[in-house]
Image (cartoon, rainbow, N blue to C red; front, top):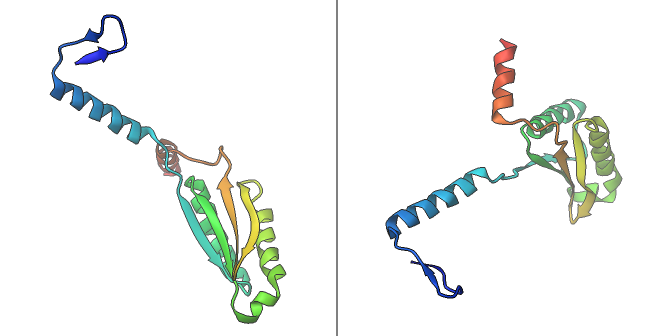
Length: 141
């Protein structure tokens, strides 16, 4: 196999091509294993959400953020609710105020058609690896 075709004279090496292909496949597999994939979860709200439902959805968002996922928060408007988008904006601002210490706003609230959305990302210190989560579970008992 030719190693350096542009060198003078060209450099060649006799090698087992099957072994070479196997090593290349292992390197590619390791590279895929070490890459990080960012997950985006979505939580949908309505403008007329009640206090208990809001608190439940907020807890779900916090759980997603603690797992290291980004969260897309969507407020869905129907019918005459479109006349008052400020209600949806108030809900998103309240959510931001409640989560200032756990998350950062990646995309501020934006109205697109009948939906208003924003993207929340966890702080880098909030993210847990699998080993950290396992350690915490062991310490709770």
